[in-house]
Amino acid sequence: MNRIKVHLERKYSASYDIHIGRGILDRLALILSKNGWGSRYFIVTDAVVSQLHGDRVADVLGRTGLAVERLDLPAGETSKNIQTCVNVAEQLAQRGADRTSALIALGGGVVGDVTGFVASIFMRGIPHVQVPTTLLAQVDSSIGGKTGVDVPSAKNMLGTFCQPRAVFIDIDFLETLPAREFTNGLAEIVKYGMIEDPDLLEDLTSGMEALDRRDKRFLETIISRSCRIKKTIVEIDETERGLRRILNFGHTVGHALEAESSYALSHGESVALGMNAATVLSERLGYLSAEDREHMLSVIRHMGLPDRIPAGLDTEGIMARLKRDKKKAGESIHFVLLKRPGMPFVNGGVPLELVRETIEAMKT
Image (cartoon, rainbow, N blue to C red; front, side, top):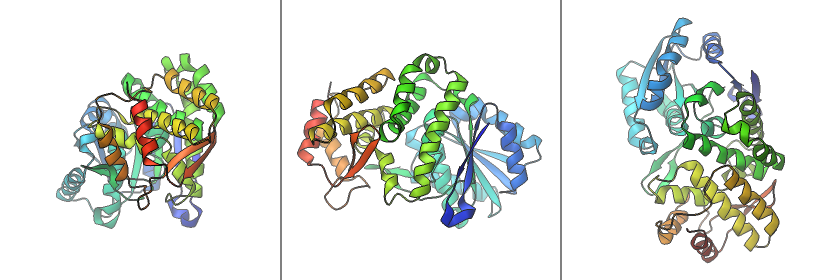
């Protein structure tokens, strides 16, 4: 099992370990029992994950003498809203949860974000642990302490920074992950290659056979590399005031596409389209060579991710959502662009007409 330490030096007590391995639920139980982060643990999960893994996780924790209960959310992005958080908080209150209680996020990005948000505000803050079950959550959303829920006009508009006490990444969870969800996670791994580690792009492409059969040894290596990249960036910029913004590569257009499609486009698919748009903008603004742009587009395609925006999505609707992006400053929409693979930067503002032209050109 790999252990990666996230060092948050200004708040030593907020530093935590990412545990990565195969069949590590027993390790999860032992660490929870040893550290005593909660007198009672509430597993927050969704209906799908609960049916697949809920009983097994609860049984493993219960066998170590931990007091464990479960709260199930409806599955899907539509649960990622403030009313869901209110419902979870109400259930916790009704069951007698207090400041000595702790939450366990068992699921994908929606469950992780909702659980972290509730943990940050319930009784002004209680501990939580992330146990991600999707590839996307394992390499991205479970690490770094960003929590958030959607409002009707934009994604992640309400949220907090709330670091978990630990992250437990069990590769075995990926055995039951649907193919589309597995491909979603590859988008975030591709992102790390584009912004930080170009060699990762080559390893993904050459390792496609291993990815197709979900080889656990290969996955553990790729996931660990991704987690190390994210943890290093989070250590430098915990609250996204500077360097951490490069992790939003592909997300500016991606979030707008995801919301405008009413989430028919998944997060990973939307980020892939957003990365493609960002490389096109980088080339058209004179920063990125056509050769590099085409190479990165070929990796996106090789991973089975989309590179064309559905024709039915309204361009003006996408543009309106971009203007409400939480990362904008005044009237400027900041984009993470590339000078070459592994060399990102935050652009002070891309002309809106160029963004509009790029979106139109990318439509099928």
